[in-house]
Image (cartoon, rainbow, N blue to C red; front, side, top):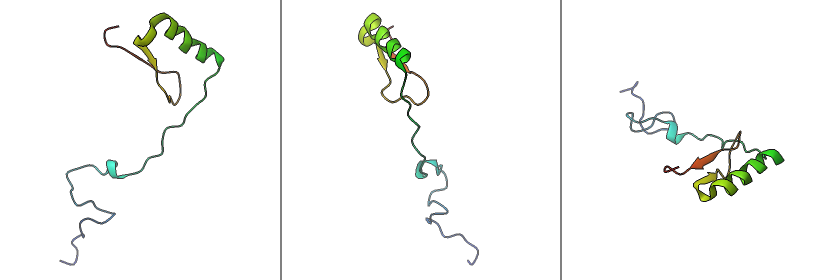
Length: 71
């Protein structure tokens, strides 16, 4: 019994079937502020397509939009 690892410590989770990634902290994605041209793109899409195209609230590297499935 000397060499058996104690289960449930910070080194080994009590269930070995799962991944430990959900237990690990990861930093949030960085946020950027877009320039005037990218903001104009957002406004142009909103004018043309209305609510069918929604801008992501906190993109991390480029303007990102969601489009309704029917469009």
